[in-house]
Length: 212
Image (cartoon, rainbow, N blue to C red; front, side, top):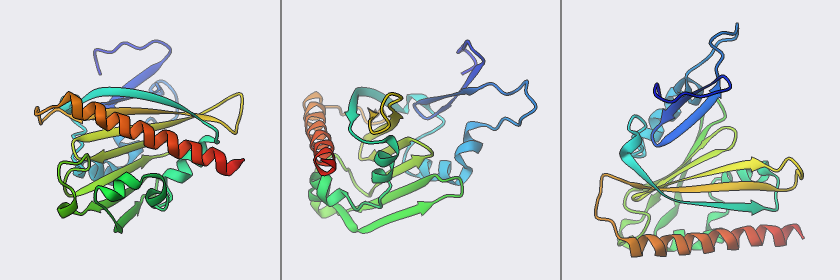
């Protein structure tokens, strides 16, 4: 990050493959904390436990970005993400079919309003699926950043408010793949994104219909 020169009084810090920006407060009287301090040591440690090497920007490769316009306030989108897995059997049926054991869904809350949700994967039902083995982890960094780790995949959801309409928001999804395993398959990746986009569009459509 020392090589990145930013205008406008901003500084940046990295956290795995992500770059965070903040106002440079070094010259002000207010205290300026590091990104890891802001996120919390316990939260960062749990993220690392989910096989996200936060000290290595090259451990994941960015492979796709998708932006969705959602007929919902951004806080409603986040509230849905944080519902403790309640929506998963209804909105993400493929995840349950591929092995998510909803009876083993766990939630950890942190003092700084961050949280981590995790769910075990039934290994006997999870052969060559996107979930991999072990568990899937869904980490929320207050107020609007979601990190999802499963199998070889890491994806992020960031909800942005619509300044012109409080009942709408924009959610940006980014997908990354673990670089430590080079047994890559372009056809499988394309099939994964095709299924995932279909799931997301269907889920957002249902949310809109319920509001109507």
